[in-house]
Length: 246
Image (cartoon, rainbow, N blue to C red; front, top):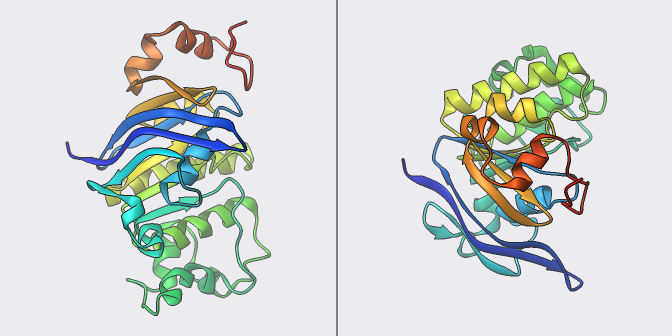
């Protein structure tokens, strides 16, 4: 299977503090990779590097073999979409939010806003709704539709269900996983919910203290982690932020 994304020795420093250190891994095309680890480990920082919300201070990130710094940032963000834990929808209608990306580039979306709404499980009349007056689950579905309207090849998912109630979280999780599979999208999914990571992903990368500790097929990792830190993490014996084993 061809690698869609390849990270080599990626590091990030802010104010002399290392947030990420020499992170290397590849994401096969069409697969879902879960980024797991304690709070403060650097998972969200890593996602922010992948569509250049920030740039690394060392190493390289390649999309289809091309360093992402060689790509126009708007082109990159069309190809690499992002869905946040708390989506920021713009004032205006749901339809205007969904078609914002293509409109910004002077393009027409591949299909009408109503078709993207149908894909994320919302009725067509939602297109005229006020985007500032939606439930959390509805907001996340619209944010996903907005990302899909750009025609992405990769989706970056930063705790997309963490702010939702249990029922909505389960529905949105299933929706995102199904769309990724149906569209053949490559996805990186940050999750603090280990059972969610186990359900949705093909592979996992465990990050602790800004470093990659372990990587492997999801089933293999959850069955038999290969490091003491990995075993401690699954057993809930890792201190938040520090990575120290209790």
